[in-house]
Amino acid sequence: MNYRVLISDDHPLARRAVRALLDGEAGFEIVGEAENGEQSVQLCRELLPDLVLMDIQMPGMSGLEATRRIKQLSPRTKIVILTVSDDVGDLFTAIQNGAQGYLLKNMDPDEWIVYLKGLLDDNSEISRGMADRLFHLFRSGKGQAHAAMESKPSVLSLREEEILMCVASGQSNRQIAEQLMITENTVKNHIKNILAKLSLENRVQLTAYAFRHGLTPFGHK
Image (cartoon, rainbow, N blue to C red; front, side, top):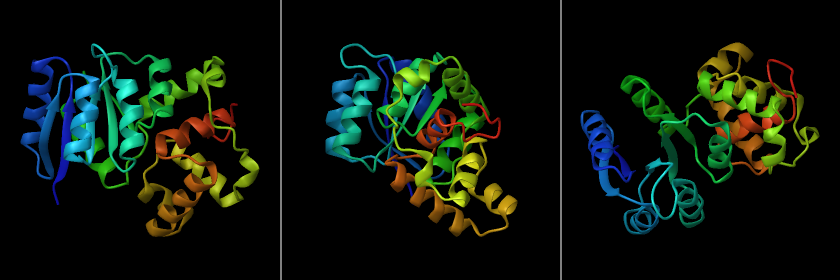
């Protein structure tokens, strides 16, 4: 199947570059382009894309605010923030607003494709760079000030905590299954249950939650 993609960026050259990258890959169908946050929300309402590639800095409504509104309008739509900055504050705000991913514009194009396909197939691990930025955010205490995830770890079973730690370490479903000697379907079911228990939406939010509560391979809180 083809995944319907909306590109949102105020720079025409940036939109053209993203379109050129995805046009050459099977499984992606560009259904529209938006040049600001307001237009992104409107086109999502009209086109119902599976994925939005959202620039974080746009005139008028920012990509962060547009992300929040789109997720309210269409929770199933997946949003990946695109930015030239790896500012952890923006990263955490994007997660809180419902973004499923966070890609730097200077990343290798092959990394983009691998990540996006994994995300759309619900089998995307957290990148090491993203996990590192989340770790430093929470270690600095800034994450505690921004966090809105108040469910306690006690609601999770020991197995669920174990899987949560694997997710936070950047492992894919297959890697988790091999490490714990269970099936990938079992891993997926556990992750769905964890998300439901914690009222979270995606693996990025799970990773932030893990760092907040010290459920990481590093043992830091």
